[in-house]
Image (cartoon, rainbow, N blue to C red; front, side):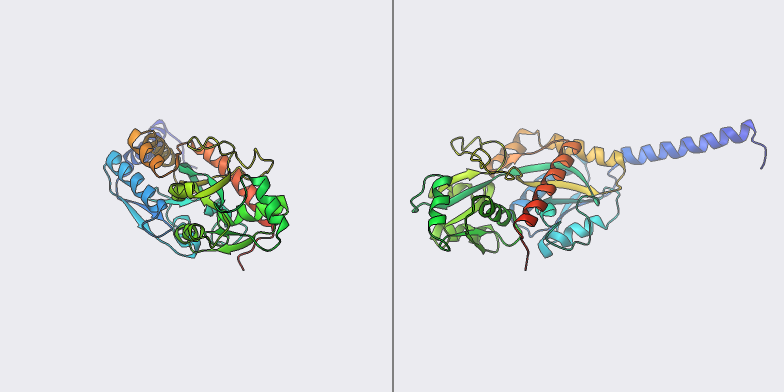
Amino acid sequence: MGKITRRTALAALGSLTGVASGTALAQTAFPSQPIKLIVPYPAGGATDALARMMAQKMQDSWQQTVVVENKPGAGGTIGANQVAKGPADGYTALFTIVALLQQITLMKLPYDPIKDFAPLSRVAISPSVFAVNASLPVNNLAEWVKLVKANPGKYSFGTYGPGTSAHLQGELLNLQTGMDMLHVPYQGAAPLVTAMLGGQLTSAFLDAGSSRQHFPKFKLLGVTGSERLSWLPQLPTLKEQGLHSFEPLGWFGMFLPVGTPKAVVEKYSSEVQRILKLPDVREKIEAMGLVPGGESQDAFAKVIKSDAEIYARIVRDAKITLN
């Protein structure tokens, strides 16, 4: 081995300093090219609208183009897989919903929703409300359970489709109360609400955001989550009514591929939290019937861990399949 002289040591130190400075400069300069925000669902829905709002705010702040790309298909897994398998450089991010976790025990996925993504924050939160047809002779959940049990096979619950939040919640309600409500799946929120309004369905877990304007036409018997809704303070939570595992809420959140440089992840996280404190952003989210998010990466990671465990337990205990 050659002798290490003062000159070679200084040269090596200079080289290392240059590399470190270059890395820091690259991180500081992020973003230096356009960013893609992948939405794994069609354009036009709440997920798309929220993603475009965030993209515009990020673009204004970072002075770099942020493009929303809709990559629908296979329940959102096509778009999510693109991000999971893509470069972890911060230039491709994922904007998705809680279905990312619900699919873990329902589908064979080409990625791991927990290990392959770095969570940034929830952008918006949406509780579900359990609603029944207004013509039914019930005024609370206990009366509904009594009615259903007295009439086996007569009553149904509708959902946005197999494996959705509404499906898991309906089966969990059956399981915990001993009811036998029949699952009737629809293709999305609009046809589900239409069926409820038309009386073809007797009950459903409805997304508070997309269905809020229709709530006066139904009898509302409970809400998911640990707290009552500020705009429906008289509606008790299902937890208050003696049920459990209804604490998880629907959410819209942002992720980066795991392995993205820490400095870039932190820059995203700070930016998302900044945006979600803006009065105009909060007003838009609340106008959609949603609750603004904006927690830290660590707080969102804890939500993900807890939600995933509860959903897996529901799927197992209620023997839910997508067949």
